[in-house]
Image (cartoon, rainbow, N blue to C red; front, side):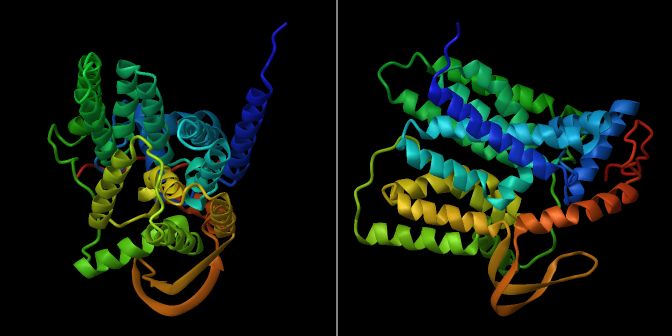
Length: 399
């Protein structure tokens, strides 16, 4: 007779419920991001004609192929299920890592703050590449934690294929790992770590060969699209979108409690990898200042900023619970100090009124707009929402 530990059953039930939650929300449709439908078109076209053209530069080969084939086999029901599984498993790996350094209750609360963030929920319940890269990075970190260095390499390589910008995160992780092992007397792990870096680099490069071929055997695919904003316009967007990643009210609590901790000069427990986390945050923020396009670009920071904050305030549960409650509220109601006006054609912010505003939450807005977005983009890109098939039209070429 097989005996199952009660704690194991509780963990399985908790993450099973998380998966069910994300999947139920995924039933509203593919998503509202136009890039989702570009990836569907790219994936379906590549599978039908064996001709690959990136959905947008530099190319996102792994999610494009997975989203393409799952959309053909089971429409958004299957495509979004993959995202829900990845989103849930990324949280599970995150929890496994946290409970080594935080008390068990705080670790659970931190996972809930991240997992119930509206932008994380949207990523885990729609067909978009953000969750793919997060999931694969967490897999790579989990394997490194077990010292399975070579096995982590393919995970990091695919993570880079999902979001090239996350090469900064992967690079920082590897360099930090080399540094801490180089300082030790026993340096036997240096060789397998170096091999892992080599394998990840080669595989990551190979996954961009389809983009290289699509752009006439050139490196023209190594570019990005951003509006011609001034430095001040970059700064405004940078500050505003950083604030709304966590939500305005949760951010106020986080900043206030952190400031209080600094003023009181609380002694914080020594936790490994804090320096690495700070370095990654700085790298990601510098990159985001250059391309402050979408709040979801900042999703990796949730896995770093929230636990670092919990450590800074000495894991005060009442404060963490307060932030969790406010995070949940942000899904249905968003508090703002700006009422932004958008250009009807480009959908870029062009003006804003200052005041105190209560708006519909980001998750509610996304779910309510999915049906209309799906109808528009399927028509715009020549796809059939009723019967996904290999007979899609494809009119985008490399530029």
